[in-house]
Image (cartoon, rainbow, N blue to C red; front, top):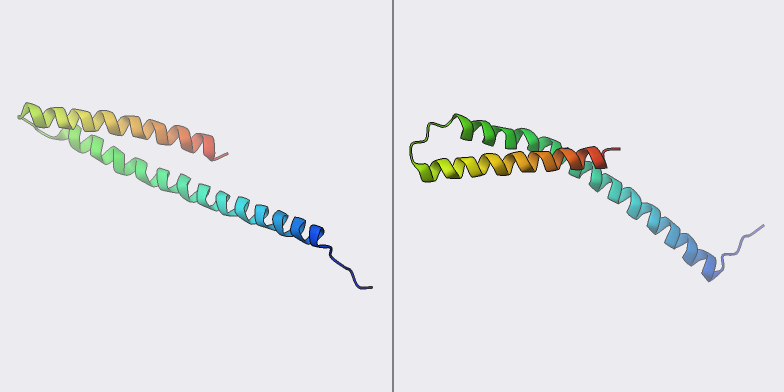
Length: 88
């Protein structure tokens, strides 16, 4: 028995398939984003350690190092929170 597909049913099937593919692609992108953030945390940590251990005599450079430390700590906290939220 031959099945016939009405234009409306066909459009619905295409729409459903497209939504499924977009969701799968979004999940793949989300996984890549989480892994990217996980990889960035050690990089940010190294910037903190380098800035903390530097023997800086110029107050302008010390301020820059302090700003780097504060910014990197904030970004690490943000990434950890996002990873925790997205990786469920």
